[in-house]
Length: 138
Image (cartoon, rainbow, N blue to C red; front, top):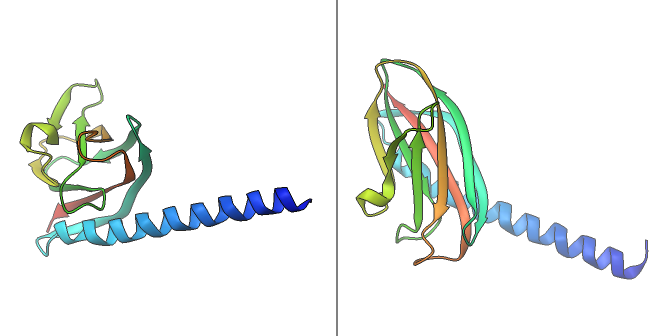
């Protein structure tokens, strides 16, 4: 491997490390929205976003539960928009309708596969780490 390739590899590795560290700190900050009334599902859904990129996450939510969905991007000002869709792609919620609220509490009557989309509010940020955390009520 020549010096140019080694330098490129090291630069890319360093960038990935910094991005992962940024997402780790965003995930830690986002977990504060999963209060003592909720139990985390143990996952942090993460994506690096730039411009109009859309991150898409799928999960199954179980009927009879009350959930809290928290979405963060690391900014004190909420610059992340998240939308929740059912399996037929009907929008159930958009944080854009609520001043980019960082979390939403909701109850489900029946189990469903949902898609959660996260996108940056381009009026507030051009890039960042999107983190979603889901908790269910105890």
